[in-house]
Image (cartoon, rainbow, N blue to C red; front, side, top):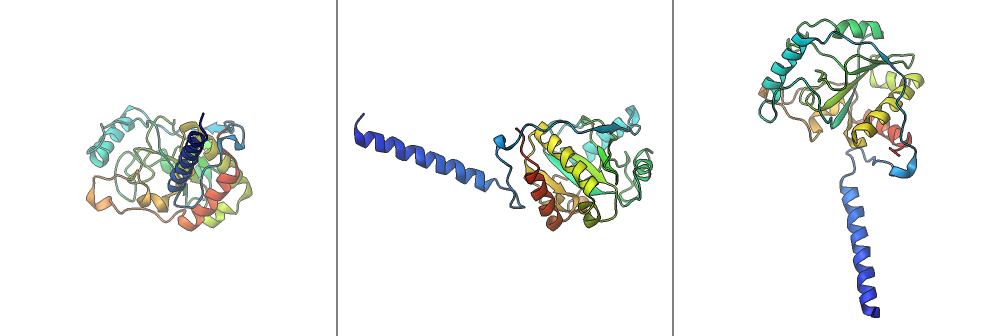
Length: 239
């Protein structure tokens, strides 16, 4: 091959590599934390999860379908099924224990904030001992974050503040193991592991009810989620 042709090919490869790096950089998260390289660690194992289901029978599912019709009907077919989640939302419970949290979610009564059915819930609750409780199958939607319920997994942490949870070694260790496993299972980037307080900035946020389009909560704000995402990145990639 002529020397000038070889140089041309090498230049093309360099430009291609540069474009790939630029694309990855542009996809970096709001937090400034990018996903670890795929080879940085073995694929994470499923952590130990205790199955503690709340009642979620046919009536609650039908209520979820009606909720989706009201809130997301402009862009999706009403369903109670959670398919291909794109977001993981981190919460704290404002309750003293797992049992108190369970007792909040289990009854199918209108929630005290928005007065809608079905009652609110989360897929997982992590208690202060670091035990991961699963309340709802991952194939079912839960009402935990306005505008994102259609595509988000909800994880509650027993406690009353971001800092309380972040400083709890056992709770945080369990949280990072669970979230790493979930995000790798569903190919969710670290940038879409968000705090409830960050919900409005998610590219997946959708809400058909005008009065709720700016509704969010204070748990896990951007500064504290930057810390959480840095820890999650250090926990390893997806193998």
